[in-house]
Length: 77
Image 1 (spheres, rainbow, N blue to C red):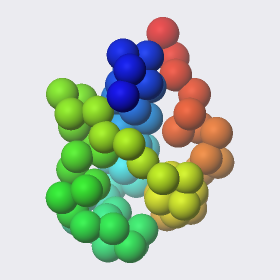
Image 2 (image 1 turned 60 degrees about the vertical axis):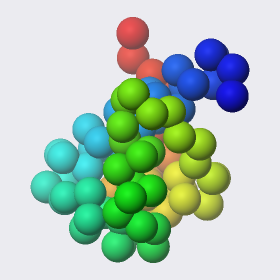
Image 3 (image 1 turned 90 degrees about the vertical axis):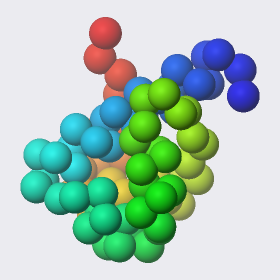
Image 4 (image 1 turned 90 degrees about the horizontal axis):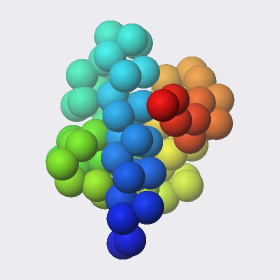
């Protein structure tokens, strides 16, 4: 994974964490609702551990969070 992609995965993870907290969900709750493990959820959100995420998982998380998937891909400076 190159540095540009690492930064993008990090930003996606931070966006997911932000919207998860707005929704009042724990990592475990979001993981269960999206059909992934809590460990994978934790790795996705961890800023020091850029983790790739499939489009299916990204769309499932957006569905659970009730936001457009594009919101998770929008990076604010």
